[in-house]
Image (cartoon, rainbow, N blue to C red; front, side, top):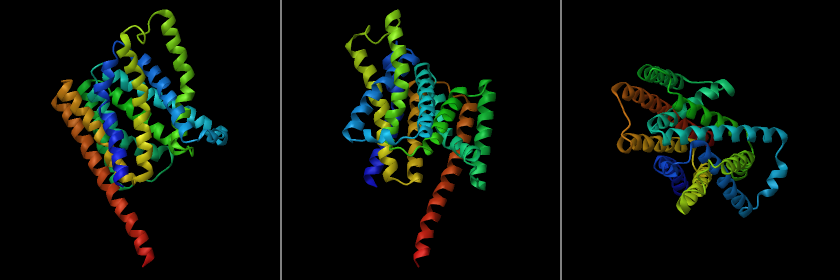
Length: 296
Protein backbone atom coordinates (compact mmCIF):
# COMPACT_ATOMS: atom_id res chain seq x y z
CA UNK A 1 0.00 0.00 0.00
CA UNK A 2 2.88 2.38 0.77
CA UNK A 3 4.15 2.05 -2.80
CA UNK A 4 0.66 2.74 -4.11
CA UNK A 5 0.43 5.88 -1.98
CA UNK A 6 3.74 7.09 -3.35
CA UNK A 7 2.62 6.47 -6.93
CA UNK A 8 -0.74 8.17 -6.32
CA UNK A 9 0.72 11.16 -4.50
CA UNK A 10 3.33 11.51 -7.25
CA UNK A 11 0.69 11.58 -9.99
CA UNK A 12 -1.57 14.08 -8.26
CA UNK A 13 1.32 16.30 -7.15
CA UNK A 14 2.61 16.46 -10.74
CA UNK A 15 -0.85 17.46 -11.97
CA UNK A 16 -1.02 20.02 -9.16
CA UNK A 17 2.24 21.63 -10.30
CA UNK A 18 1.10 22.03 -13.92
CA UNK A 19 0.13 25.72 -13.37
CA UNK A 20 3.82 26.41 -12.71
CA UNK A 21 4.99 24.59 -15.83
CA UNK A 22 2.73 25.51 -18.75
CA UNK A 23 3.30 29.29 -18.62
CA UNK A 24 6.96 28.46 -19.32
CA UNK A 25 5.88 27.35 -22.82
CA UNK A 26 4.80 30.83 -23.91
CA UNK A 27 4.60 32.27 -26.53
CA UNK A 28 3.24 28.92 -27.77
CA UNK A 29 -0.55 28.95 -27.89
CA UNK A 30 -2.83 26.39 -26.27
CA UNK A 31 -3.39 24.38 -29.47
CA UNK A 32 0.32 24.20 -30.30
CA UNK A 33 1.09 23.08 -26.74
CA UNK A 34 -1.66 20.46 -27.01
CA UNK A 35 -0.18 19.15 -30.28
CA UNK A 36 3.27 18.75 -28.75
CA UNK A 37 1.83 17.13 -25.60
CA UNK A 38 0.20 14.52 -27.83
CA UNK A 39 3.24 13.93 -30.07
CA UNK A 40 5.85 13.57 -27.34
CA UNK A 41 3.62 11.61 -24.97
CA UNK A 42 3.00 9.18 -27.86
CA UNK A 43 6.75 8.81 -28.40
CA UNK A 44 7.23 8.06 -24.70
CA UNK A 45 4.35 5.58 -24.62
CA UNK A 46 5.79 3.67 -27.60
CA UNK A 47 8.98 3.23 -25.56
CA UNK A 48 7.00 2.18 -22.47
CA UNK A 49 4.82 -0.35 -24.33
CA UNK A 50 7.90 -1.78 -26.04
CA UNK A 51 9.69 -2.05 -22.69
CA UNK A 52 6.83 -4.04 -21.13
CA UNK A 53 6.40 -6.09 -24.34
CA UNK A 54 2.69 -5.37 -24.76
CA UNK A 55 2.52 -4.60 -28.49
CA UNK A 56 0.76 -7.95 -28.92
CA UNK A 57 -2.21 -6.50 -27.03
CA UNK A 58 -3.04 -4.37 -30.07
CA UNK A 59 -4.16 -7.46 -32.00
CA UNK A 60 -6.67 -8.27 -29.27
CA UNK A 61 -8.46 -4.90 -29.37
CA UNK A 62 -11.94 -5.28 -30.85
CA UNK A 63 -13.68 -2.79 -33.12
CA UNK A 64 -15.88 -1.63 -30.23
CA UNK A 65 -12.85 -0.96 -28.04
CA UNK A 66 -11.14 0.95 -30.87
CA UNK A 67 -14.20 3.23 -31.00
CA UNK A 68 -14.09 3.70 -27.24
CA UNK A 69 -10.39 4.54 -27.35
CA UNK A 70 -11.05 7.04 -30.14
CA UNK A 71 -13.67 8.72 -27.98
CA UNK A 72 -11.26 8.68 -25.03
CA UNK A 73 -8.53 10.29 -27.15
CA UNK A 74 -10.92 13.07 -28.22
CA UNK A 75 -12.15 13.72 -24.68
CA UNK A 76 -8.71 13.86 -23.06
CA UNK A 77 -7.49 16.13 -25.87
CA UNK A 78 -10.37 18.54 -25.19
CA UNK A 79 -9.56 18.39 -21.47
CA UNK A 80 -5.88 19.18 -22.08
CA UNK A 81 -6.74 22.04 -24.44
CA UNK A 82 -9.11 23.69 -21.95
CA UNK A 83 -6.59 23.25 -19.14
CA UNK A 84 -3.63 24.74 -21.02
CA UNK A 85 -5.79 27.68 -22.11
CA UNK A 86 -6.96 28.23 -18.51
CA UNK A 87 -3.48 28.09 -16.98
CA UNK A 88 -1.90 30.36 -19.60
CA UNK A 89 -4.67 32.96 -19.42
CA UNK A 90 -5.04 33.53 -15.68
CA UNK A 91 -7.84 31.06 -14.95
CA UNK A 92 -6.04 28.62 -12.64
CA UNK A 93 -8.75 28.96 -9.98
CA UNK A 94 -11.41 28.10 -12.57
CA UNK A 95 -9.38 25.02 -13.52
CA UNK A 96 -9.15 24.04 -9.85
CA UNK A 97 -12.94 24.35 -9.61
CA UNK A 98 -13.27 21.88 -12.49
CA UNK A 99 -11.24 19.25 -10.72
CA UNK A 100 -12.94 19.87 -7.37
CA UNK A 101 -16.35 19.12 -8.91
CA UNK A 102 -15.06 16.24 -11.06
CA UNK A 103 -15.91 13.49 -8.49
CA UNK A 104 -19.44 14.88 -8.26
CA UNK A 105 -19.76 14.97 -12.04
CA UNK A 106 -18.65 11.33 -12.07
CA UNK A 107 -21.50 10.49 -9.70
CA UNK A 108 -23.99 12.25 -11.99
CA UNK A 109 -22.60 10.46 -15.05
CA UNK A 110 -22.90 7.14 -13.22
CA UNK A 111 -26.60 7.90 -12.71
CA UNK A 112 -27.21 8.98 -16.30
CA UNK A 113 -24.96 6.60 -18.28
CA UNK A 114 -24.67 3.49 -16.12
CA UNK A 115 -28.07 3.76 -14.40
CA UNK A 116 -26.38 3.56 -11.02
CA UNK A 117 -28.58 4.17 -8.00
CA UNK A 118 -27.68 7.08 -5.73
CA UNK A 119 -28.10 7.01 -1.97
CA UNK A 120 -29.25 10.01 0.05
CA UNK A 121 -25.69 11.14 0.76
CA UNK A 122 -24.82 11.24 -2.93
CA UNK A 123 -28.04 13.04 -3.85
CA UNK A 124 -27.31 15.58 -1.13
CA UNK A 125 -23.77 16.12 -2.46
CA UNK A 126 -25.10 16.72 -5.98
CA UNK A 127 -27.74 19.20 -4.77
CA UNK A 128 -25.11 21.17 -2.82
CA UNK A 129 -22.78 21.14 -5.86
CA UNK A 130 -25.61 22.42 -8.07
CA UNK A 131 -26.21 25.25 -5.60
CA UNK A 132 -22.49 26.08 -5.79
CA UNK A 133 -22.63 26.29 -9.60
CA UNK A 134 -25.65 28.62 -9.33
CA UNK A 135 -23.78 30.88 -6.88
CA UNK A 136 -20.71 31.01 -9.12
CA UNK A 137 -22.88 31.69 -12.19
CA UNK A 138 -24.62 34.60 -10.48
CA UNK A 139 -21.28 35.97 -9.25
CA UNK A 140 -19.56 35.89 -12.65
CA UNK A 141 -22.64 36.58 -14.74
CA UNK A 142 -22.25 33.38 -16.76
CA UNK A 143 -21.76 29.68 -15.99
CA UNK A 144 -18.20 28.66 -14.95
CA UNK A 145 -17.52 27.26 -18.42
CA UNK A 146 -13.85 26.40 -17.86
CA UNK A 147 -14.56 24.48 -14.66
CA UNK A 148 -17.59 22.70 -16.11
CA UNK A 149 -15.73 21.94 -19.35
CA UNK A 150 -12.81 20.37 -17.49
CA UNK A 151 -15.08 18.39 -15.16
CA UNK A 152 -17.34 17.10 -17.94
CA UNK A 153 -14.52 16.18 -20.33
CA UNK A 154 -12.52 14.35 -17.65
CA UNK A 155 -15.65 12.77 -16.18
CA UNK A 156 -16.71 11.45 -19.58
CA UNK A 157 -13.15 10.29 -20.21
CA UNK A 158 -13.31 8.27 -16.98
CA UNK A 159 -16.67 6.82 -17.97
CA UNK A 160 -15.30 5.69 -21.34
CA UNK A 161 -12.18 4.22 -19.74
CA UNK A 162 -14.41 2.26 -17.38
CA UNK A 163 -15.60 0.31 -20.44
CA UNK A 164 -12.12 -0.31 -21.89
CA UNK A 165 -10.58 -3.67 -20.84
CA UNK A 166 -7.16 -2.93 -22.38
CA UNK A 167 -4.00 -2.64 -20.26
CA UNK A 168 -3.77 1.02 -19.10
CA UNK A 169 -0.29 1.49 -20.57
CA UNK A 170 -1.45 0.23 -23.94
CA UNK A 171 -4.69 2.23 -23.88
CA UNK A 172 -2.89 5.49 -23.03
CA UNK A 173 -0.45 4.81 -25.87
CA UNK A 174 -3.27 4.06 -28.30
CA UNK A 175 -5.11 7.24 -27.31
CA UNK A 176 -1.99 9.31 -27.98
CA UNK A 177 -1.40 7.39 -31.23
CA UNK A 178 -4.92 8.08 -32.50
CA UNK A 179 -4.51 11.81 -31.90
CA UNK A 180 -0.86 11.99 -33.05
CA UNK A 181 -1.51 12.25 -36.84
CA UNK A 182 -3.72 15.30 -36.30
CA UNK A 183 -1.16 16.82 -33.94
CA UNK A 184 1.70 16.22 -36.38
CA UNK A 185 -0.31 17.71 -39.26
CA UNK A 186 -1.08 20.81 -37.20
CA UNK A 187 2.57 21.29 -36.19
CA UNK A 188 3.72 20.85 -39.81
CA UNK A 189 1.21 23.49 -40.99
CA UNK A 190 2.40 25.87 -38.28
CA UNK A 191 6.02 25.35 -39.30
CA UNK A 192 5.31 25.84 -43.02
CA UNK A 193 3.28 29.00 -42.44
CA UNK A 194 5.83 30.49 -40.04
CA UNK A 195 3.50 30.54 -37.05
CA UNK A 196 5.22 27.83 -35.00
CA UNK A 197 7.27 28.62 -31.90
CA UNK A 198 8.95 25.22 -31.54
CA UNK A 199 12.19 25.98 -33.38
CA UNK A 200 12.24 29.78 -33.11
CA UNK A 201 12.87 30.38 -29.40
CA UNK A 202 16.06 28.52 -28.61
CA UNK A 203 17.02 25.10 -27.33
CA UNK A 204 15.39 25.67 -23.94
CA UNK A 205 11.98 26.11 -25.56
CA UNK A 206 12.45 22.91 -27.58
CA UNK A 207 13.34 20.97 -24.42
CA UNK A 208 10.34 22.37 -22.54
CA UNK A 209 7.94 21.49 -25.36
CA UNK A 210 9.26 17.92 -25.47
CA UNK A 211 9.09 17.78 -21.67
CA UNK A 212 5.41 18.73 -21.89
CA UNK A 213 4.77 15.36 -23.52
CA UNK A 214 6.77 13.50 -20.88
CA UNK A 215 4.92 15.31 -18.08
CA UNK A 216 1.65 14.42 -19.79
CA UNK A 217 2.31 10.67 -19.89
CA UNK A 218 4.26 10.20 -16.65
CA UNK A 219 1.46 11.06 -14.16
CA UNK A 220 -0.94 8.87 -16.16
CA UNK A 221 1.47 5.96 -15.73
CA UNK A 222 1.88 6.70 -12.01
CA UNK A 223 -1.90 6.91 -11.67
CA UNK A 224 -2.34 3.55 -13.41
CA UNK A 225 0.22 1.98 -11.04
CA UNK A 226 -1.52 3.51 -8.02
CA UNK A 227 -4.95 2.30 -9.18
CA UNK A 228 -3.66 -1.29 -9.17
CA UNK A 229 -2.46 -1.00 -5.55
CA UNK A 230 -4.97 1.24 -3.74
CA UNK A 231 -8.63 1.05 -2.86
CA UNK A 232 -10.85 3.41 -4.86
CA UNK A 233 -11.71 5.40 -1.72
CA UNK A 234 -8.02 6.07 -1.03
CA UNK A 235 -7.43 6.99 -4.66
CA UNK A 236 -10.42 9.33 -4.59
CA UNK A 237 -9.24 11.11 -1.44
CA UNK A 238 -5.78 11.61 -2.93
CA UNK A 239 -7.43 13.26 -5.94
CA UNK A 240 -8.22 16.37 -3.89
CA UNK A 241 -4.48 17.09 -3.66
CA UNK A 242 -4.43 18.29 -7.29
CA UNK A 243 -7.15 21.00 -7.21
CA UNK A 244 -6.02 22.12 -3.74
CA UNK A 245 -2.52 22.77 -5.10
CA UNK A 246 -3.96 24.49 -8.18
CA UNK A 247 -6.25 26.73 -6.11
CA UNK A 248 -3.36 27.68 -3.84
CA UNK A 249 -1.22 28.56 -6.87
CA UNK A 250 -3.96 30.64 -8.47
CA UNK A 251 -4.67 32.64 -5.30
CA UNK A 252 -1.20 32.94 -3.73
CA UNK A 253 1.03 33.11 -6.82
CA UNK A 254 -1.29 34.19 -9.63
CA UNK A 255 -3.18 36.63 -7.36
CA UNK A 256 -6.46 35.76 -9.07
CA UNK A 257 -9.53 37.48 -7.70
CA UNK A 258 -11.52 35.61 -5.02
CA UNK A 259 -14.53 37.79 -4.09
CA UNK A 260 -16.83 36.62 -1.26
CA UNK A 261 -19.34 35.02 -3.64
CA UNK A 262 -16.57 32.94 -5.20
CA UNK A 263 -15.42 31.77 -1.77
CA UNK A 264 -19.04 30.86 -1.00
CA UNK A 265 -19.25 28.81 -4.21
CA UNK A 266 -16.03 26.98 -3.42
CA UNK A 267 -17.17 26.49 0.17
CA UNK A 268 -20.34 24.78 -1.04
CA UNK A 269 -18.25 22.56 -3.32
CA UNK A 270 -16.07 21.57 -0.36
CA UNK A 271 -19.16 20.76 1.72
CA UNK A 272 -20.44 18.59 -1.14
CA UNK A 273 -17.07 16.84 -1.35
CA UNK A 274 -17.11 16.29 2.43
CA UNK A 275 -20.53 14.64 2.17
CA UNK A 276 -19.30 12.54 -0.78
CA UNK A 277 -16.13 11.54 1.11
CA UNK A 278 -17.94 10.55 4.30
CA UNK A 279 -20.33 8.40 2.26
CA UNK A 280 -17.42 6.78 0.37
CA UNK A 281 -15.57 5.97 3.60
CA UNK A 282 -18.75 4.55 5.17
CA UNK A 283 -19.31 2.38 2.10
CA UNK A 284 -15.72 1.10 2.14
CA UNK A 285 -15.98 0.14 5.81
CA UNK A 286 -19.27 -1.66 5.17
CA UNK A 287 -17.70 -3.58 2.28
CA UNK A 288 -14.86 -4.73 4.54
CA UNK A 289 -17.27 -5.91 7.23
CA UNK A 290 -19.30 -8.08 4.81
CA UNK A 291 -16.46 -10.54 3.94
CA UNK A 292 -15.50 -10.72 7.63
CA UNK A 293 -19.09 -11.57 8.57
CA UNK A 294 -19.33 -14.20 5.82
CA UNK A 295 -16.28 -16.03 7.23
CA UNK A 296 -17.76 -16.29 10.73
